[in-house]
Image (cartoon, rainbow, N blue to C red; front, side):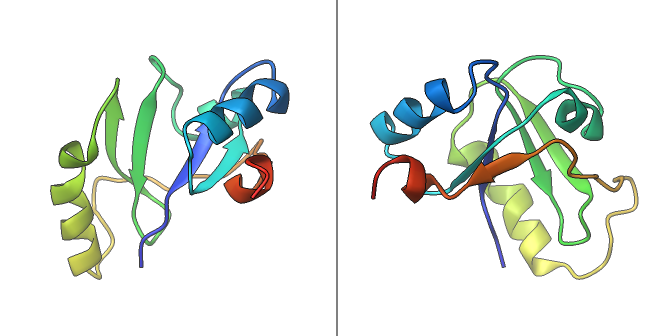
Length: 108
């Protein structure tokens, strides 16, 4: 399977995130992260940063900067096709996350 989660690092919290989720019509779950969250992923160089996590909870790919689906299609297809653990990836601890489904934030 495949799941998309958004993690906002916005210091203003839900007051800033809820309107953005609604305006952008985000249809996936959005969470709030903190410094512990960033540290769980080895730190963040810049925002946005996209991590593709494999089924074993390991970082399989990292992309820093704005991207579109073409930037991720190949790695996602490969991960969906494979069953083995990626050798050069590392486990991710999901610390410091708080959130609920985007539909709740968008008033749907």
